[in-house]
Length: 179
Image 1 (cartoon, rainbow, N blue to C red):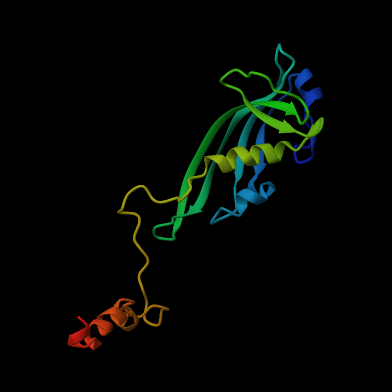
Image 2 (image 1 turned 180 degrees about the horizontal axis):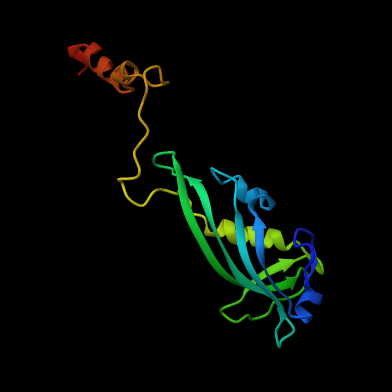
C-alpha cells in the first residue's frame, strides 16, 4: 500500500507486490505544471499500477485525467482544457541497458530504487499540453482590443519609419551626370 505518494517510492518493492493506486492528486503538487496554468486550483485523478514483467522490468502504468485552465494564446483569456492520458513506462536503472522494449513500453531512466513518482506523472501531464493553446472556434475567441493610452497608439503606427526611405533619398540626391 502507498501511504504518501508525495515522497520518493521504492518502485521495486511496489512492483514485486503489484501495488495499485487510485486517488486524487492536488495540482499544487506539480510546480512545473502549475507554471503553465492560468488557474492553479484542482486535482488530477490517477489510476496507477506498479508491476514487474516477466523479463524482470519494473513498470509503472496508468491513466491520468484532469481539467486544466490554460491561457488562450489568441485572445489571452482562460481556456478549459480537459486532459486524459494513458502511459506504460519501463523504469530502467541509470547504468543499465534497457535492451529492446515492446512498442507499448517507454523507457524512463531512474537513478535509484526510490523514485519521485510525482515527477514522472508531472512529465506525462506536461507532454500532453498543447504548444500554443487556443479556443477551438473563432466565436469564443476574440482578439484583445486596443485601449486608448496603450503602448501602440494609431499615430505611432501611421508614422512608422520606412527603412528604405534612405535609398529613395539617395536616388533623388544623385546628380544626372553620375547616372
